[in-house]
Length: 151
Image 1 (cartoon, rainbow, N blue to C red):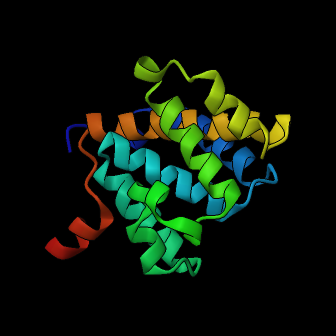
Image 2: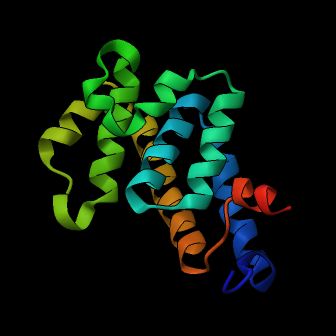
Image 3: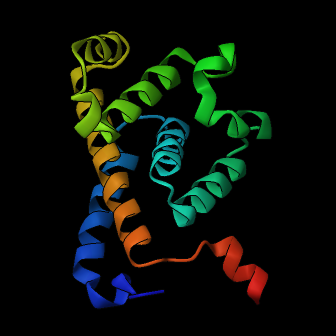
């Protein structure tokens, strides 16, 4: 690890934790949020977050088949609900905002499935996970699974 940001800036981590706490009580389904977090972490290549969210989803009873297909959710048929598919599409577009500019058609499709509050909360969750990914990647935070293997 390059730097332990949790020790270097505990107040900043606590502030991020407050946003995380808000998201988890916002009314969005926790599995949906975790699937979004997993997909964002796949896009960004964050090993620490991939490990954590895969474990969390597994503990919540999400089947391995579904976990294995998150990155190809568009091809997974009805394995993902309409809300999950809309959330994953939105997460991909917002995460890649520099390339996508988040097109109107993605907004319209997502708005058809989520209320305004839900969409605002989902977008905050996406921003938060992108920030967490950038911290973990930049400072080389090792996945818990890799740490356990060393031990």
